[in-house]
Length: 142
Image (cartoon, rainbow, N blue to C red):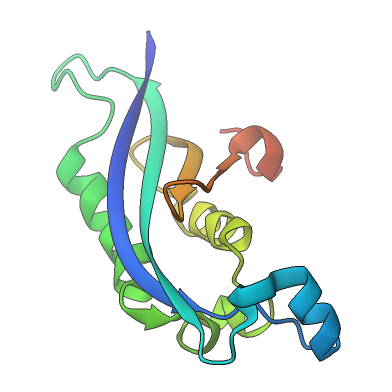
C-alpha cells in the first residue's frame, strides 16, 4: 500500500523580478510592479508531498520529525527572511519567480531519504500558487 503525506511549511522572503537579459522597458512589461528596484516580499506557504509504503512497525510513510528537520535544513534555513536575488546562490543566475523558487525547492528536497518526493506546491499570494511534480521535473523515478 502506498500513501502520500502532505506537509505545509512557511517562510518569508523578498525578491525582485528582473532579468539582466531584458531592457528596462522589457522588464517592466514582463514583471510590472514586481520589477521594483527595491524588491518586494511574500509570506510563502510550501506544501511538500512525499509518498511511500506504510512501515508496518511505525505505521508511517516517514517520520515527521525527520521530514521537518530535512525541510528546515534544506529550505527554510536558506530561504526564510532573505532577499532571494542576493542571498540564495541559485537565484543569482536565474530570476526568482515563484515558478523558479518552486523548482529550486523540489531540487533541494528530492533526495529526502525516507520517502519519495512527489510534488512541491508553493503559494505566493491568496491568488497565486504553483506546483512542480516528479512527472514534470524529469527527476529520478526511484
